[in-house]
Length: 172
Image (cartoon, rainbow, N blue to C red; front, side):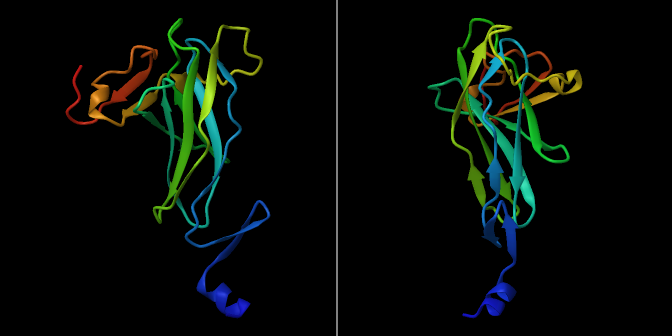
């Protein structure tokens, strides 16, 4: 097949110097957060590029070793997608496990690696991923991925400013 026929058959987009053909999954670029301050809401952001439209960008997070993840949707904020996760209560966890996944309108998806976000005392973290916007810190939405997660936020997370959305049939 000649190049003109190929180019007519699918759109060619150049992202980060690499060719991307139509129906490719989104490109998710995220600088992993190294740490966050105990009891403070956590801000995570990612750049997401696609050859079409982005349908959803989500952060999946959990206590290390747990089976099910919790979900927080990332919202587009001009140049990148960001979300706020609930803070971790004092003395409950030393780290939080997370990854970011994007899906386009063609149902193609791509995710980052899984990262460990260290939860540290005030002043112990040089560049904490703490949410500094009080409005965002008071409007956190967390979704359950399993009915086993119940109808309330896990006890290791601070519920201040958080709306928890259980999966149908959950128990307290």
